[in-house]
Amino acid sequence: MPPVIAPASSARVALWEGAGGIGVTSIPCPPPRAGEVLIRVSVATVCGCVRDAIRERRLGSWPTVLGHEGVGVVEAVGRGAEALTVDGISLAPGMRVVWARDVGCGTCGACAAGATAACAEPRELGRQAMTDTWALTGSLASHMLLPAGAALALVPAGVPDAVAAPAGCALAVAAAAIDRAGAIAGRRVVVLGAGMIGLAALAMAVEAGAASTTAVDPCAKRRRRALAFGADAALDVDARVPACDVVIDAAGGADTFVRVSGSLARGGVAVVAGARAQVPDAVVDVERLSRDGLALLGLGRPSPRHVLDAVTFLAATHAMRPWADIVSPPRGLEAVVEAVAHSGGSIARVAIAPGTPASAVTRGEPAHRP
Image (cartoon, rainbow, N blue to C red; front, side, top):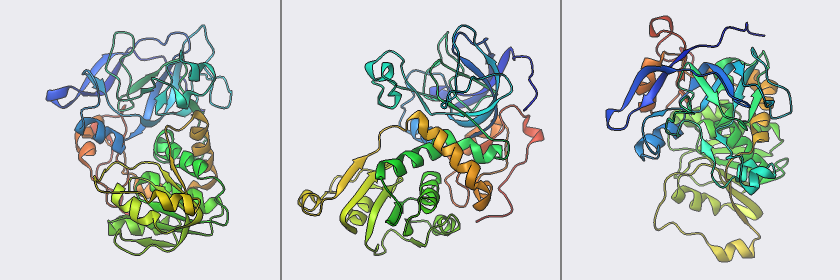
């Protein structure tokens, strides 16, 4: 277990300041209140949600501490209400954890029933405007304050920080998509998009006993990467996709989704897990949905148990696939602007070590690429 240190009095953060862009600054680090958990962030990864939020100005009122993917060590736990992991373990300083992207409001009917994934007004970490009571809302910071009700999962010692960091967002989404698709064993699975969500969905489908797995992506580097993660075939978006039983759209785009869904066999299921691009003239053949008994499913938000599923999956299989090769060596907070502009290729995630000075971290991409 990592050594326990005295709680910090201030935190360095990557702050979105609206028209001023992203700046690195220090803000007070308050002690956690009842049920809250103060995390010292070890590694944060920059997912596409950060770029989308900035580009689409969905951050609400500024300023905002960016990011939600990450892994860190519990530094302090607020007294007065027990803070638990997803599987019911009492949190204590020194524990290494990951956390879910979304936090339920805690007051609506869904939250009261324990169904936080269906919360009427969820709070997404890294998109909440700073307030007097909650400023450390994002993972691109030396410290992050998780509110009461946040979903956390312990990370086993054998899982590297850079591998664990995306578990609360990308891998939890993939786990939710596999769950939503139903039984995978013996079925032919096609995954649209070979980013972090798509790679995780491919690997999870392989581990679940899929008869075959096919990746579809417009980028040749990403297609090669998909093969390294277990895909039996990796096709360009214009290629003919063979008959399949399950389609998981991990940001493939609406036009590609509609075309590939045409390859679904009778009784097949399509899960929309991360599509962003919308094409006005893309249509779904409703008559065929009915005739062939197809299921077209939206994903919604992952539940807390999907974070645990993601960590469990990584703990059991991370040594079998090149997860570490698709995450950059850690960089300092000053590299966040560059990381937000990163467009993918052979690297799926840029890693940030928020508590480490820029001069002490490795820069550049890994020498070994999938």
